[in-house]
Length: 202
Image 1 (cartoon, one colour):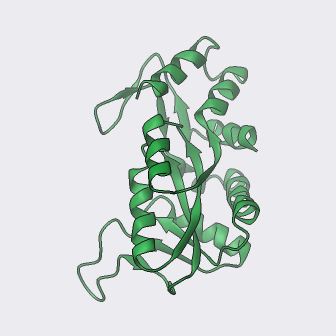
Image 2 (cartoon, one colour; image 1 turned 90 degrees about the vertical axis):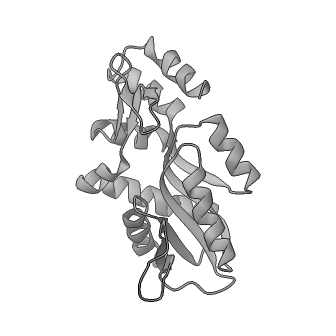
């Protein structure tokens, strides 16, 4: 499955490798990789594969899940589609509480003690994902874990998730994707180690 998802992400340009002409992240870091999993929604076949994989991962790792909660905004659509496949309730967590109405930060019905799984599109340093988990915990939910589409596998992110006692299962990751990218001609084979070295030094 990791290879299948990696192939889909590369095919539609959701994960793009450009080691010879690095992208500039918002932080200013020059990166050989750019990830935009929102593009999955625009490609029906890739979307079908990814959303079914999310649903399958939830069933496999968190069979007791009672609801899916998406991260705002990138995880919302993926949580909604996967929840439809699974026949589960769905909601999402805002980045900031609304300034009108009931001032909700959590949208959708969440009962105290409800067992939920967070759906995230990308795990990098883990900060935004952990914030969502903590918001749900404060509201009385039992967060079983996170299912994400892709992870860079950045050491800082893995450590932060562990410290926050958050279990994440990603459909694919940078280690697998670089191998697939070299095999399928997206990058020259010699760039595989250099891209992973960049990741390891973050």
